[in-house]
Image: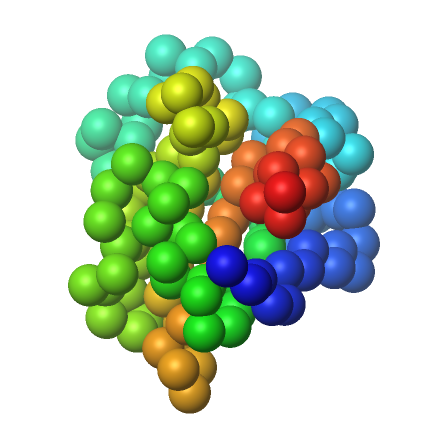
Length: 141
């Protein structure tokens, strides 16, 4: 099975775009997987309760973006995740899922989005920030 166009989304900056806003709002800033990002706003219990009462926002700027394209892209991803994604329409998320090895061992939790493309075989896989390169190499094996 050929896999074309597996590439990591290039990070223009290793600083989340809304960092200054988070600082102004009192966010605690730190490093995660090479990114300067907001870590928390103090008490995680208070954050949890605030989200339950109102709304929450989780900035995913630091997450990876792997573009998977080509005629066999959908078949490849169907082999790598434990849910069938072939029926997902372009523009929709195939749900949060996971990469599993051939023994059903856990590799990483990911999000997958069907972008479309001429053959319908173009996907964006969003792995955890700390696992971007490891997941890319594993997919290519």
